[in-house]
Length: 377
Ligand SMILES: Cc1ncc(COP(=O)(O)O)c(C=O)c1O
Image (cartoon, rainbow, N blue to C red; front, side):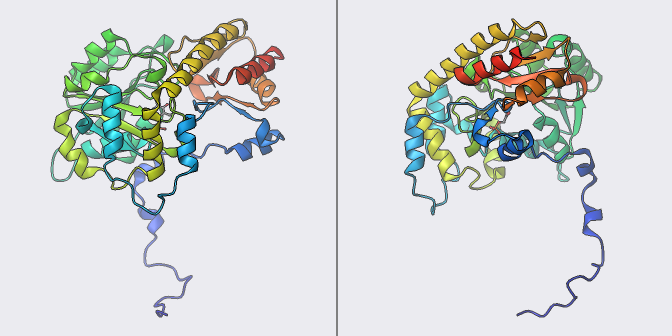
């Protein structure tokens, strides 16, 4: 055994925790409650919870994918480091060149990769600023801060519309290149970026990262435009429509000129064997997955119509698998207590969004349980 030069509890010559980069002060730990914790808080068995807070797909993976996962045995092998078969299948699915596709550990990893690709280097090059248009997906600001980029917030206007003039004015005042992150449909409101908005923004000195995590529920993808615009990146995921959130598999479709740098920078073995196999299996059996998407879309429309019958809810039209509602006339805590008593978990917010609740579209039975609970408010 090696001899210790210092006793275990000795004070180190410096305090490592004092040397942690100061950017951390701007970040918050992300540790949402687990199902078990929720069940304990509500005093209900886990099996009685109806989880409608994270935009997950209540039907899960396709039957073929489940069978493949249940019989999987290749755990001792490293995965294909560059996801060749899966990228081929994605290329076919979207009619894009697979050589312009990078697969990641959820689309979150692609957001991180894009920031790493562009963050200024001591050797030169880089984009120093990110434009974030809140309310939107919180990971854009999170990764921006964690890569020491300056996050320029351009809050959305009434109705969650983008403040195009403010973005254009920022670019006109100081035309340095920026990364512009936009989700379409946007989380939390579920609305699409319009063609007019897209056309104005793509002409600015920005690399636009268009996050289409929910686009399968909308049928309005701009992924084919990545072959036309050198400043457009589209992100997609298997988490929502394909029911694979827990396996973490997303991807980006990039302009060709960025590919050599991306291949060098991507973490090796970033997508595990199960995730690659499950995503591939989903694409090989599209019919079932697409039938599930159609079911969720039909349920969304039914649920939206029913929610509109409640005088205390204002429901925003959504093209995603969730519905954002503004609560008025009663306190949001009253609504929360009424639904949680029945084990129904929804997504609540703070700050400017404290009157809003986001509801993931569940199965017909789950949605019905929600409506029953809301009738008790
Ligand atoms: C807009 C948006 N993008 C990306 C993600 C994350 O996707 P993934 O599970 O592929 O990391 C989410 C998840 O909630 C999201 O709402």
